Image (cartoon, rainbow, N blue to C red; front, side, top):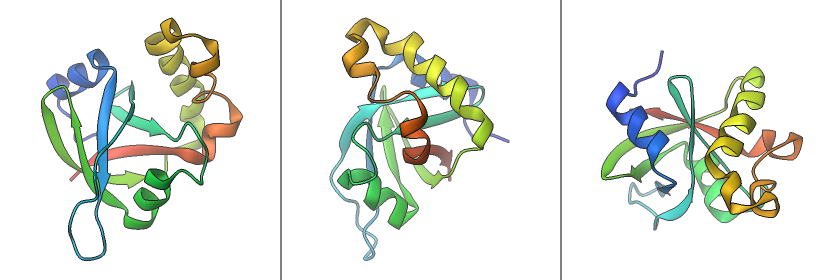
Length: 124
């Protein structure tokens, strides 16, 4: 069950970019990174456009927790591995929300190559 409220999900859906920061081992937050965000059902997801070597993604995986800011909303989150069957819905959500930026850009966050670099954001 999602911890996002209907109002928070509406903000995510209507806002193009999210700022994400993971926690360092000493408990301080790393600097924010701005990325695209989508909603599928009652869950919120982010993907690393440039693969598993992308710094923010490696740090988020390692930390497991962080903070996101989107559309004036700020939430503490856990970075979770999504269910395998959600990826077609995520691809559709990315296309619906971002296709206006062109295929070259959107193709960095859709398809089989981004399955392993997808994180579900679970509010804490």
